[in-house]
Image (cartoon, rainbow, N blue to C red; front, side, top):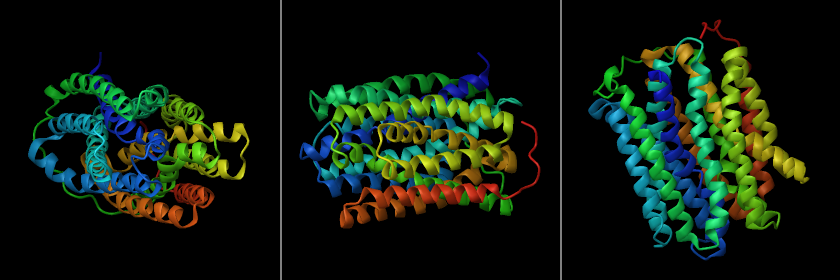
Length: 385
């Protein structure tokens, strides 16, 4: 197996643990946490908001950990920490307990994102950049798909059983991740590293940061309220919510790879515009049209959102090159993380005051539409990939 593919698989397994299971599996658990009395509706939302705040802290810590321990060593530590967070969540010790562990997994996800993409894009061969990043973010979709399939069945045995099942999946992902990152051993990516200076802040980089920020704000409604909207907002049962989370996962698994392939063919700039436009429709549609096809379309289209990350990471690599990839991606994670965390709290406060899912999803759709407009701005010609 070529090293770049093994590293891409490692990146996929890492995001499966940290994001697909560690972060996104919380969404289909929210109705059960509320109905079972483990959390109130507002507490469930604030737990998600603290997870987003953890992402910001992780982005802030990324430079120090990379300099001190190196990329792959830190990634392995994040894998273990994320698994510990899943195991700790099995215990029902209330709001503060869950807030701490969800916050911590948010920290690890940010570091995983930055280092994953730095390593994988650095070693992707010409013409395979979109494929490599697509493989990485497919791990998010696999985690969502597995959690959406298992959680409704495991919840019949209680919340502890659901968390335990997620921890078992996480352990398998950790094992694959450790195997894959072993391919970096002869590439020196595991050694402590320094950033290669800061690149000049150009309009192209500012557009990347703004686009990432709009995406982060626009995605929050589905990551917190999608299954809750279907179950408590539209009065469907948990099986219906679980089915749509499976569709969300199917969209992530298939859509991420397809978006990556499309970017390899049409270019990463065109891919960004298309994925933003699709997400804008997907986020807003289910509160405008309540037909079953609209709900299913939203699950599939927004589920494919890891494809955005695959495309914008490839676009970032094209614009700034491998030497500055980690630094610019860290800027993007930091700034978008600030707005995402603030937006997460704002969404929860808005929902607490109004009880309206509609306003939340429409705001998210508008943010994605703004991202599409930002991505339309012309830049210098793309280099071949």
